[in-house]
Image (tube, rainbow, N blue to C red; front, top):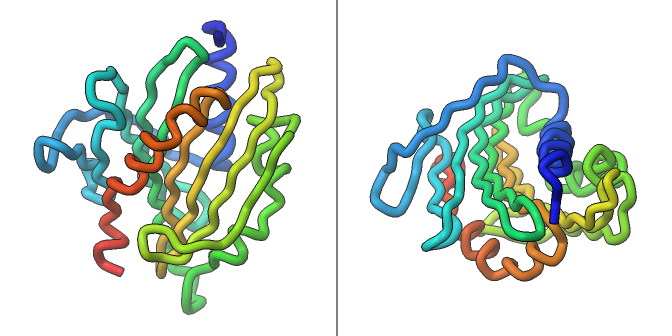
Length: 201
């Protein structure tokens, strides 16, 4: 079981993965588009609760970064093994004068993932990334397992979807055994997330 200190350390470490960001604020909301979905205040992402009958906390997050504006939804809950996080993110890319997106599926898949995840997984035991099709769009699927600085076994499962003007991310993170146990629940939640950018693409 994660200690309270371990939970805090894990949460802070995971936040580093999104990079150097400024103008950050958090908004919690229960406003729903319909009885099953919760929409962000800017309408970019709508998500359902991950599990019926279990308390999950939902937080909206908005950030400005280098060349993008991020809309993020984070759902979290705590099991005996520790905290589990589910993310849906929309990186809206700002125009730079160059036609097309500065990111491609190939460039995303070509990242140095060991370095990218180092703040969360200083020791990587499993790493797999491959281009595929997800939600009907070209994407990069990344799976990583390893241990945190505190020796906790963690697993990340992420889908990066690249469409004109946006990089969309669906992500699950938490203790390895719990993430594997929840695989069907996680896949179901990923498949039900609604991105406004996909609806328009």
